[in-house]
Amino acid sequence: MTKVPDDKTLTEYGFSERHKGQILLIACGALAREILALKETNGWDHMVLQCLPAKYHLYPDKITDAVEDTVRKHRNSYERIFVVYADCGTGGLLQKKCEELGVDMVAGPHCYSFFEGNDDFAKRDEITAFYLTDFLVKQFDAFVWKPMGLDRHPELRDMLFGNYTKLVYQAQVEDPALRAKAEDCANRLGLDYEYRFTGYGDLAKALKSQA
Image (cartoon, rainbow, N blue to C red; front, side):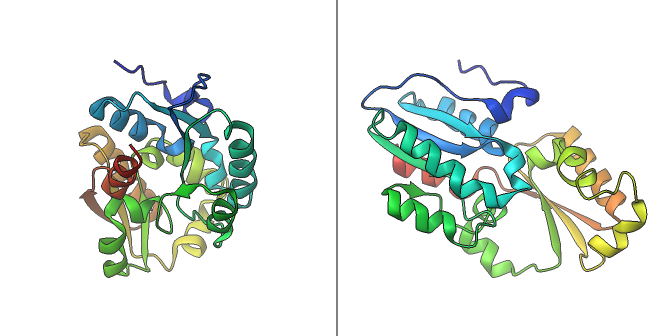
């Protein structure tokens, strides 16, 4: 059974094995638990996970360079490399770089889209929804509340979230504790709350296509 690292080490998580015949997954650290769960469930032992820091969610300009550096470092050690990022705020730069490097990546604008399913997400056209995944519910203070300064200046809430109408929790696993925490996050932001169980969505399909 695959041992899942605790939350403190997810953004640093990776494997050191480098063998021909294996597929290297270069992924956002925010997806570590989901990818490990899919690997274990499907017996994808030939897939090796290397995560980049989840904090790049806050600095998307760092993603493309970090992915390129990791591909160049490992490309001769694996049969194939797959980038487990969507565009994630890079403005198309990550897609362009992956094409230059000759590696595939997950389709979609961001993880909220591919968790729900890119086609279904596009149909909803929810421009006033703020999304959280399992990871972001767990790390709400570290990735939302504190970086936006709401811990120090709660009066910024209306300015930052005034154009949102609801918080949508896209759940990858069914966990009552996370549902309760997500609802609390919505209350703290002054937004209506909506729960959607998405599972792994197009992430599972993308990894299956590579496996």
